[in-house]
Length: 483
Image (tube, rainbow, N blue to C red; front, side, top):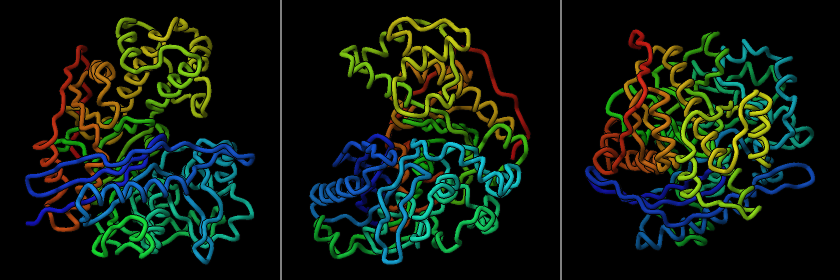
């Protein structure tokens, strides 16, 4: 079975990178060839992504991948954050820079949508957790520009269109829109009609693992890539790729994909569309190989990164290792806040908001940077534990370990606090789970590897080290009948 050289374009909410991988039956090498900042732009009409700058960096990254691979890149796959999109007119031209999900234009939009289709009916069809920036709510406030639109292109699909000229919507990301039928695994036509959106906006769905086609000639000119390079659909929602990159050996695991956001849940075969799941605000999103990512969003390391940005501007300590050492010295027993409080969603002075949240809750206010970082980490660990317990209870999935992947896997204090809070071992790593899931789906589509997601995970275990953190507390989740 021949090896493949593939490139993963992995776009996060604060940075993007292009990773080059060499993949074969016993080989999984991954190298970063280009990294760039992903900085939103605030205009008079709101907060936007600088999508043209992102695309320029993608092209530069693909050129770097070609140079690092001595000219031969077999395939490219793109993953990114969910829910955001660009609108294209009938000629395929972009109708303005995509809005950022943290923009305030969707304030009150959910109430408007829910007047057209009730929350119960919406969840029974889509199984999607309520977040005020879900695609369905963003489209509800688009206004006259929607009349000019011919297509809605989620961010990875927009970039894929620019690379290949081919329209389509990858399914794992489609499942995050609030317009996707969780049972039928198709567009929720009735929901789309009831909220007054044209059915024609939503393109053909494509599953992960489909080879989409070659690059446009202009893209080849910009990157130097050969005619043989193709673009392959991967789990284009970055969490879908990250869950493929979880190095679990069997189904009895929970995961925390920890970055700007933390996605906490379990992997299932079928959605859970119960009233209890709706009340707990759990989501059913599609994964690779027709799995279901049953999870809930937790605010994540956004709280820490925004705090560091404030301290850096003020000339205070802002390097992460020092701050984590200060947090460890602060010790346990400090205040624990709800990291999902909507007050923490917009950019701004996060330390002041955290201190105010403590006051409002009647909790001691953290004194000093170390105490505030410890408050963030304790609060995240508590939220992870609470979400894992609810996932177990709602899904009936037994859990023996928590896999923490993504950037947070490098945070030793957070990993240990999570093990303590969950009362379960935490297996930390790989940091690059999203990129690994991306390249493995590409390699399988090209025939460089074979097998299901468990075979891909076995290759990760064989080639990428992890670290195990044992709990220092006695909690074990209640057992439920196996599903």
